[in-house]
Image 1 (spheres, rainbow, N blue to C red):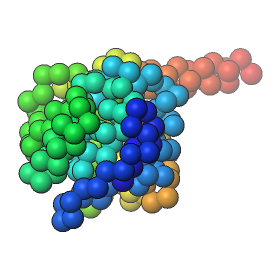
Image 2: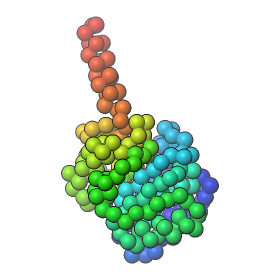
Image 3: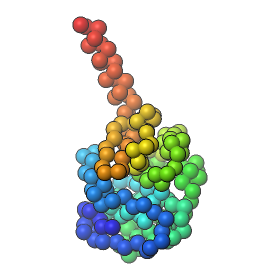
Image 4: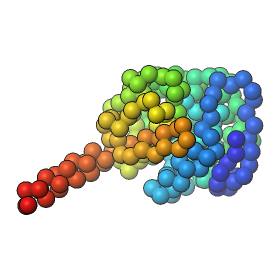
Length: 198
């Protein structure tokens, strides 16, 4: 596992064996951050990393200057490792051991980017619940973006505030933005008006 860009570009991080994780591959991570780079300047962004695992995504944000970062995972070993890496590199990462849904229910903070990488084996309704909770609790800032990593067997393009999707190998990233529904309505209205003019 390596950091792709930023202050610690090229630095390799070696998580302990036995953690119950499926880290985002370096190739997929690089592609993801290329997309995000077109929408954001990372410096000072407030980040929430759900199902954080080894902290792979959190470290990438931290290396690029995002702060503060909250990493949430239900596994004690994962949280312990994230805290160790954060201390070693002086990253402003708060690693929290919690069930993700409990955290979202209780959360009082909003974020610029929310990233979630749930286990691919979770059912469709569980993925949908993450999206619904984030928007019901207003946890995403107005100009922010939520990204969910999932397999091709999970379909999220029908969900509220869905914006676009990118596929890299066996991983799919679905992107959500608060204004995306308004843009879609505007485009549909424009198409209808064009048809009427004909």
